[in-house]
Length: 470
Ligand code: BES
Ligand code: MN
Ligand code: MN
Image: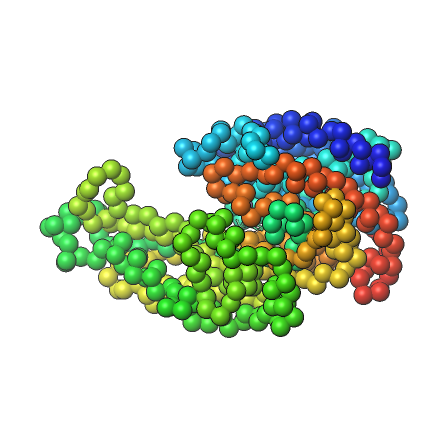
């Protein structure tokens, strides 16, 4: 490992320059006008993968944005890891709140700023640079690897599932590896063993067939914005619980053991509050902050719009009003079932005076897994070697639906090594990645691939069942 470790330490500056190129491409998956950028980004990534030594590099078109695939399979008898990540990013708006242009990687006070730098380009790059260090020092990898980097994670990964179904053989592996989560805090390397699921909806209320003067008509016609606000206000009760009948029915309660584990983690409400800038933390009574984020389902309105929102005043009753809202789900809740409950609730809440349009945007299962598998444990040890700090096991409140799908379908361990920090502004202005975490991430991941290469076939299946490498 010495040459690999030295190489990583000696190439730190180059790693930043290359990431700058990757981040310069505005691969925004949700905006149609960025389709050419998405394609350019896939091409750039594919070329880079070829350049470092990966093989069978392919840009696979889908009904949506392309998937970039590559592999290296010359370690007979060694495990095969499937790495999953995404090269698409969230829109950078509102632009005026950025302190440097979102697509020009900028180093400021030890942090690298750019849209996508932590979610997920920098974290994908951590793995590519770790592999490169092996290729450059001995010409081979300690394990077999397959890379699947998609371009529509931020919009719900619609087309990846069909690809996975069709390409079962190509994607066969002993474990899934993902770096698209965060650490509990600076200096606390973390392995993630749980994610929340989600459902995402849009509701549109239509009252009058056109906008009306609020003086001539106010008081006689249904105002869609008033009604939408009333409806949305009834989705929570006074205790901070989601007021949708049946919403909590299938929720898997937290075990005493896990609650105790959560309590032992170095997490402080006060710091968390400071990160968010809120005056106080809120939420469901009877649960701690991390319990509420990691292991309790929630509902949030993500956008609400209608009527006059430009400068000054305009007395008007809008014809339409809309809201986008989503739930976060936990283990054992079924997104399709939740969707039915939410639809029913919305239909009940809407008065007969208006038309309601209800749209489902995306759905994904929660994921929670044991963390005693040798691969997962190897992840923890590798983080400790890379960061020279004790690592912890955490869950996350965010969602990566593909992880639960993979886990359910293939029953393979998923190793989630996150290198972001909770305050690095993913999806928000001034997204950043701590430079030190970027470098230590590359080192940790190199240790991880090395350690997995040392795990023998018998340990691999978990539970003592021997399994051969494919
Ligand atoms: N990297 C995130 C997932 C994530 C967020 C993990 C926070 C851990 C903490 C991912 O890119 C993401 O944003 N996922 C979406 C999923 C949705 C679009 C289906 C999410 O969580 O909102
Ligand atoms: Mn992500
Ligand atoms: Mn994201």
